[in-house]
Amino acid sequence: MPTYKFDMASKRISKDTSITAPEALFADLETDTLYVVDGTAIKAMHGGAAIAGTWRSCVVKAPSGVPTGFAWLRANGLMASGVVVKLYADGALVHTTPSLTNGEPRRLPDTMARAWEIELTGAARVTSLVVTDNTEDLL
Image (cartoon, rainbow, N blue to C red; front, side, top):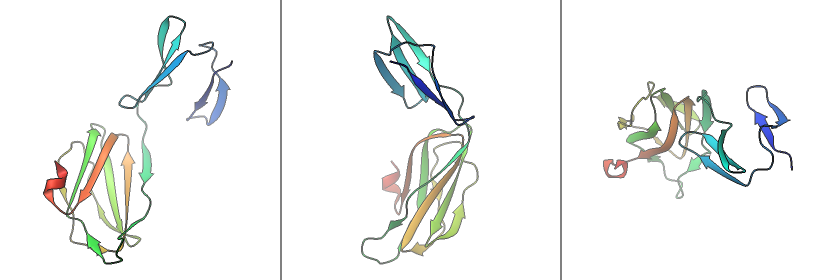
């Protein structure tokens, strides 16, 4: 059974001849590395340095239709390379953070809206993002 790999840089799928038929796979989400059991050996496959990217949430609407607001934002993860967070309210950009390199809470501007979106841009490995209206949820 051949093994295939998808190269993100070249956007091509090719056969991976370095392993025959993997017996087990493990994806380490912290390091973005796929480990493969090949016979009696464990091999790290398809890992590498983080590359910059952009992720954008879906539109989240207040269930009651009443405008809501947020006061705090906190990004967690391996953030040494930095991530920029953009907050959209009712389709308009209302706040852009400087490049975040740690998990310190950030104060958000006073904005009320019915629909919210969040966009993350950078090479940091963000494991969670909290946007809330009170400091208790940041813990």
